[in-house]
Structure formats: structure tokens, C-alpha cells
Image (tube, rainbow, N blue to C red; front, side, top):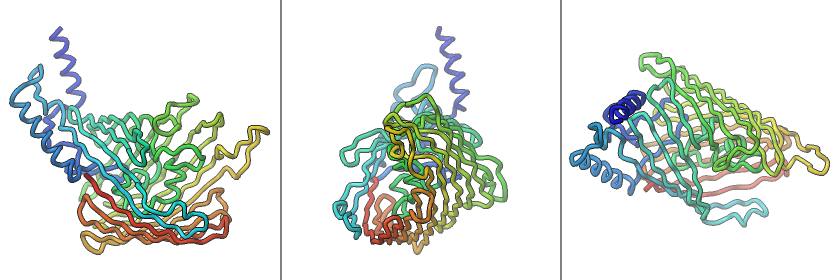
Length: 397
């Protein structure tokens, strides 16, 4: 029996690409970030860093004092878990008539997370959100990532759709997510019921291909995700699955061109609506200069478009939008963001909402920032114009 267990263990460690998994390999701020901008980052802050260091010291002490069976030490099984979290809050004001009930001080995000790896190449993450007394699970996933050309992730995680969607709010400095990211990447979806923060449950494969140039940057990135289509923390409602994916090209280091696609459906209130979407994107990020532009189009009705009494659909069954943003660095702690954002709820010019905004980001410390924002909004649906003003702060602990 012991011989059988030994053989089984040897097989598993060979599959994982067994190697020493000491703290320098941990999945934290010191780890290299993905070459293509398609992953969230989860770093430790003021409180998380000393806790993580204490956990690492404890695991090394355990190495000296004990061994698991088959001669493996604690740190050879797993990296020290990395814990962290952040909160964001701010003051918000709108001059729009009838919108003043939303003015004032607000809690935006409070999140906690833990990440790490087992046998070096099995990475995991668990993240929860506590904001506004609405505790819920945000992410839980396990990813086998031995080769840069091919990895497999399973669980609940960011949906493959757009360059903006993968940013966690603490790292997102544009001032506000674009309307197409909110409406067409399922952060607060166009259909009216999927408010999953741009996430879903499923399985994904991805990889970076073909090192090129003097710097050997990867030329091609791909992702393909099979998911429920029913938002986070929710099982499949109709036995069907969504398929989303992207092909990205990096012709020169730091410049990316991408095409995204997403097809599937969503069921709510005994109504099923289709979601067929695509996005075309460009992204430049070199020496702290950042430029990003994306266009997205959606075909498929809202849940509210269905009339149960007549069995008929109203509405255009289409939506689209686009945005462009520019980040200009002035020094190590100050970066100015300019953004033009447009969205059409029925893919017609008469329904266009446009937002012109300026958002200085003041990075006092990597774990502490302030961001004022002023936006001018023109909504052609109601021929209305107003000003939005906010100032946010974020602290990573």
C-alpha cells in the first residue's frame, strides 16, 4: 500500500512540475505580472505584508522541525498563503435633476483575498467582498500554470471580455469603468439581471505564444472560457453554456491589439435572452504612458423587453459603445487620466450617452491613493446634460 501511495505521489509531483516552492516563487507582488494585460493583481498591503512574512517564517520553522511522509517538507508542498485586502470609499455628487438622493459619502469596495500555490504550478485564489453589508464570494479558482503557452483555470473568475474588465477596482485608475465594460461585460449587465462584477463560473484555457524580437516578448495571447452564463454564485439555469474568448497580438512590447467574442444566453424570471457580443480593442502601456480604446457591440434583448401576456418582444435588441482613455504621467506619484466614453442602449445615435472626464490620480504610496474626478455628461435620450464630481480614496491593507 505504501509503495502504491509513493508511486501516486511521484506521478502527481511530476505532473505539477515539482520544484522548490520557497517564498521567492509566491504568487504576490514580487511575482512577474502576466505579459498580456488579462489578469487581476492581488498584492499585500500594510497589514497583509507582515502577516505573510510571519506565515513564511512559520513554514520554514516547520521545515526544520518536521517532515511530511516521503521526505517532503512543508514549503516543498506549497508556498505560504498570501493574504491581503483593500477598501475604497469617496464622496459623490451629480447636478442631474432628481439624482441628488445618490449624493454624499459612500462605501465603494471592501475586499479580502488569499492566494498561493501548491506544487509550484497549481495556483489558487479566494476573494470575498464585504461592501455595504452585502457579503458575497467574488472569486474562487484553481489554475494549473506550468507552461506559458497553455494553462487551465476552473472556478469563478473574471469573464473574458475587454481590457478593462480584468482590472480590480484598486488598480483601476481611470476614474470610472467605461459604460461598455459595465453594461456589456456583465459588471451590471445591459440585460437587467446579471450584476456579477464581470465574472462567471466555468473553465478556461489560455496561453502566450511565439517569443519574438530582441526582448523575446510574446506575439500572441489567447483565452477561451466555457461558463454558465448565469453570473456569480449561481448554478446553470437551462443546461446551456456561454463561450467567450479573445485573440490578442503584441507586435511591439507594450502595444496590444485584441478581438473578443462572446455568445450564449441568460435565463431570469422564466425568460431567456441571447447574448451575442464582440469587442475590438487597442492598448498601449509603456513607461507609465497609457492609452486604451475599445468598441463593443451586443445583439440580444433585455429581460424587460419580453411581454409575457403577448409573447412578443419590444426594444431594438441591440446595444453598442466605445471609449478612449489617455494616462499621462507627470512624476512617480501623479498621473492624469483623460477619458471620452459613449454608450448607446439601443445602438442608435438618439440614445447616446457621452461622458467627458478628467481624473488626476495621486499615488502617495503603493498602498494609498486619492483620485478626484470631474465628468461632463450628455444624455441624448432625454436631451439632458449634467456634471458629476467625486473624490475617492483607496487603502490596501
